[in-house]
Length: 285
Image (cartoon, rainbow, N blue to C red):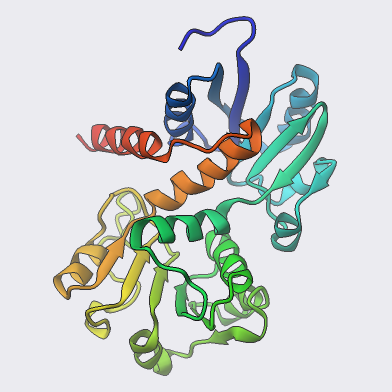
């Protein structure tokens, strides 16, 4: 793709952001769709966030992805935010509509798209267990609640954080005590690891978020970690014939929703995945 005077610019803001896979994923999408857009990373310290948002308006940047630590702080700097972003108090995608900035949150719905794509699972009427209650877990709990899930159970080291996250689930939410984990896991159609346990750059690859021997064949598990592509937990579950998928799909499908919000077109997810896998494998060498 040739950059020209009519190239449309989008990007990601966060701190740090140099490690982000988003430029690889979205530039692959623009190339595949044959549109003259370019996506880059803007490392943005917290004290410069308001200046950065003013810069989008001034320069006519078409949109931004937003990552840590700005997802909540940015809300008050925008002209409008979607219902989901408002409920979560977190924006991960900004659309610049002729100077009017609207914030969205595509994380949770991106997760549901990913599970549908990877496993063919419609979560309506299903029992789901979420391990963790951070930002990703919260967005997923919110989307699961809207999608008609039968039960959303949460296990977390800090009970207060779990209960805060469960408010997003409404009446179908359930806090899981330590002695209930075995029973809840055995009944779950889907178990999601939304903690960093098993992530290659934390060094914490020895522990499991939930003991694999509590699972049985026919269940589905998703680990939101995408580096490594297959975590020790996923491999242990596969040994028990449990269907497992990693977090790369959520990353791709939340980006696919941002792509559509910005361009109005369906995202070429296969090209996005191929570019992401290639980048991760290269980094691992």
